[in-house]
Image (spheres, rainbow, N blue to C red):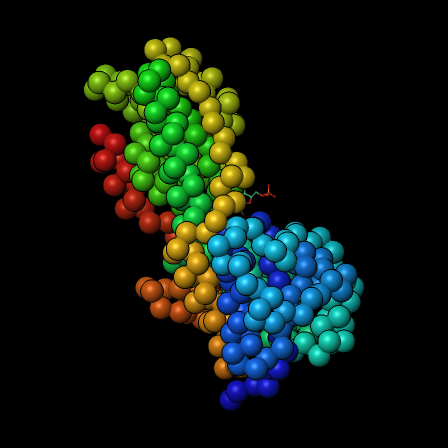
Length: 328
Ligand code: F6P
């Protein structure tokens, strides 16, 4: 049975990612296409609590598809963790007759969405937006492809200087709990070794591998290290430890940091954002709630929040084997 959604609101929450603007645009235009009223909420759940809304029509999202970041801005709202503030947030929606919410964000944002939706019986749909690609139930999250391209471009540049000076570079990439960025950018950029949070093979194996590649004739190397990797205490300490065991290497450290979160979205992310934004409005019109709209085998999929949030996404471990082989 179709439910009677007439007015929806959209917000972006948590760490921003390239493609969020394109997703907002798609939600707004799909709303206009279906004769729904649409509001944007500034600063994620914080703006929802503080009543920071703007009405958005099809023309108010022009020239956004190519822009990184999120024009609605994003926040990690601590207030939204408390029921008292969630009550205020719900009142702000009701005062404008908003009867559904679209949340673009990561697992923390979906956790808030799930609680809110159940507490106040309002339909909420999630769109996975994070560069980490760590949300279960979707093959890709918004911004991941752009971030990979940013990392590969940066490492290509590092490779030039690494090779000119015969140096070993440790390059830290984002991914607190997930190795997707490290593993895929590492293969794409031709890294010697890739260190990820999901697998701790110990420093001895790393040293041994670097030793072997030196002996095999390699004069410079790139090691991609995910932010959440367990081997070193931190990347600088890891560099010191490697230099101790392999004095023949001069080790340099580059932390790519937040450049990975910025920039114009790739075409893949723009198309994904457009599909997920339209998918979110479709889902609301079909009477869905408490689900994330994701992509599985190139098709739109509806995934219950509890599965997106509570089931850990599995890493493609065959990529580790591929990385090992192609770095021989
Ligand atoms: O969740 C996305 C992410 O980019 C993580 O990879 C990273 O650990 C974190 O956000 C950084 O967050 P902040 O912008 O708050 O430093």
